[in-house]
Picture (cartoon, rainbow, N blue to C red):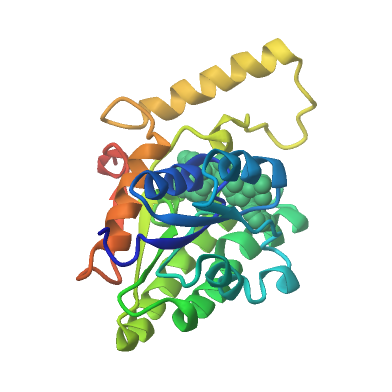
Length: 259
Ligand SMILES: NC(=O)c1ccc[n+]([C@@H]2O[C@H](COP(=O)([O-])OP(=O)(O)OC[C@H]3O[C@@H](n4cnc5c(N)ncnc54)[C@H](OP(=O)(O)O)[C@@H]3O)[C@@H](O)[C@H]2O)c1
């Protein structure tokens, strides 16, 4: 029997990238999963591959109404819930002076406010012994010039996680976070353009994308970007680790070792 925390799990952002790898790792281990996100088709590509084991609850987590009762709905689909993983997130790289109002609010909603609200729900819904795991980022502790909003949101998320861990302890519900370095997903394949830069031709976009990925790779002493599976393995461990709560686990190929 798999560990409590890994059996019946809601994974936000579970249709793509890190969230999808987490969902697939749990499913392979025999767990049941509800995945959430805005794009129905990516969620369905997972649920059709895992009939009877994976379910979808499409929703925009920036919407107060849509996230209301999400954990209870997930528990209703699975007949209970012992794990919650918040992987949904957005990053918009903009330096001070060029931070758009919409980008600011969208990043705060999905990276900070939604996990706080869903974490509150999880305290009520998760079975004793269960756990919540939040995907933060090394940018929470070491920002770059374009990450003020994202870094602030992820740093705030770490404090939210610790409060949830403190409060949840009374019911035996744990909370932890992982701080990945750069992981090769759609999020990092999007080319970061300078403020005001025009659209790029397809070949130029591809060239800039490869250069960007090579530059990011070079930041990691271990010489490669993270894979979604690297993070998924750690998340699954934390979900089931019955004496870990309030922890921040850095997974970054040595990135934070650098000056
Ligand atoms: N990749 C990295 O280098 C890296 C490093 C550190 C931390 N992280 C964090 O890891 C998490 C997963 O990111 P990823 O790298 O796997 O990128 P990703 O594939 O772009 O995943 C982000 C997910 O969030 C969902 N999402 C975004 N906005 C949403 C909203 N308003 N409502 C509901 N769902 C929403 C997206 O689904 P829809 O678009 O369908 O809604 C998508 O499935 C994020 O929290 C990110 O900040 C990533």
